[in-house]
Length: 512
Ligand SMILES: CC(C)(COP(=O)([O-])OP(=O)([O-])OC[C@H]1O[C@@H](n2cnc3c(N)ncnc32)[C@H](O)[C@@H]1OP(=O)([O-])[O-])[C@@H](O)C(=O)NCCC(=O)NCCSC(=O)C[C@@](C)(O)CC(=O)[O-]
Image 1 (cartoon, helix red, strand yellow):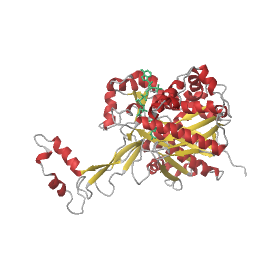
Image 2 (cartoon, protein in one colour; image 1 turned 90 degrees about the vertical axis):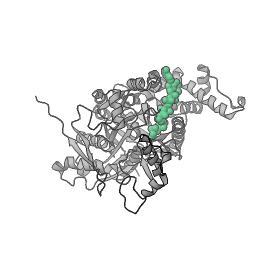
Image 3 (cartoon, helix red, strand yellow; image 1 turned 135 degrees about the vertical axis):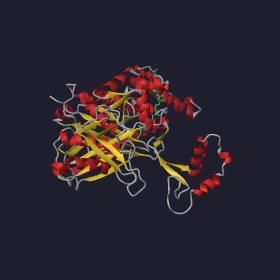
Image 4 (cartoon, rainbow, N blue to C red; image 1 turned 135 degrees about the horizontal axis):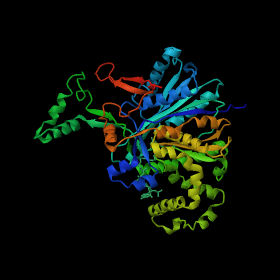
């Protein structure tokens, strides 16, 4: 049976209005800016404002997609959200997105205009958006008139002064998924590799009441925790069944969920490198593509980018394996006068593994590899340099950046193909192929990505720190009309505790 062409018809992006220059962060942290800029490709990081969260960013991206494509909300069968910045442990963030959109379109299409729209969150670190896409592609393939939206939205926030801080970012990418797409047809074969890992995660952190009491006593002048009867204080908090406060709860401890992850940078890089290699092998097994033909089969390679230069740094291993598979490796080694480490020369296995890592870095510094990066990978890097990590949205931002860059290249006609490498910590990679469709130029010309990034507002390091510490009471951006915002969070400890309410700031109409 002939299977229909399904894929992405259009993209919309929402990036917060505020950014911090990486140079200013480097000065504040006394870091070597050349390392961050030349080594990791960082220029700016998008910073979420006080009244922005994963739901507002997703809703803003979806709203733009709906307007751009003149969609009737009643025809949208699903909105699937990929996020690791969930606002609730049970209620999907996607329901908040739906709430905002429903209110926005109620006057035109009625208050029930999204009643039959299926929404859900998919979470798998940075790859949740790709999981949502794969699922929605299969759904759209099953029936001709199905229209689905996939949106990936996150705030990538790390502890201050950690090695993740300079990779931070925020934003959302929404995409329209349907049959006969104008932009990108996506092949049904997705290669996948999954191995449970603790390279980056956001656990529920367990804090005992005793620990909190000790910390509070430590803040008091002239009192020491040693002088207090901690057992008695703790026992006072476990009386009866009613919950009278934060510490006066029934459990012996509190579970705290933080947006900032626990992570091991070098290990996360190793996981990324291994998983994309394994997923590529699986992709070949499923699709029939052969080892050694990657650069013949695909014009561009697009990756999840936790920072702009991640892919170029991690891909050298696959590059080497490709050359080995197509018989060009020996010539490459000779031309570049490389000394290949040989296991027999090392008694210590660790030393040999270190040598192999150093050797791969040398491969990545060759002129041939640099040229390969310039042509196949770099077109997808520039937006990441200016935005930082979007977590679930990063791989899609990189796709948009590649297409917007390709607009300026005459030779990029329809029929050109892209191999996409997605990664999510924890850990999983998916590899899939996409092909540019005849109308891709018209669609990509309206992305407006570069102009949107140019129109943002730079903030000082001091303002960034306030936003990071959540001490700014109001939005900082001087211009935030035409977007959804977080109005308030219900604070009273009753049946509505924690409920979030959102609003929409209408765009100001400038006098003629
Ligand atoms: C990613 C790391 C580990 C990087 O760690 P790091 O210590 O910042 O950087 P590094 O030392 O590994 O590399 C610095 C590069 O700068 C170069 N350099 C040095 N000095 C100079 C100079 N003066 N001039 C020019 N270049 C310079 C240096 O040579 C090197 O480049 P190389 O040669 O290796 O290509 C860190 O930023 C980190 O911990 N980040 C957070 C975790 C992360 O992003 N991991 C990435 C993989 S996991 C992932 O992608 C999933 C994730 C994070 O998105 C989460 C999810 O799935 O939800």
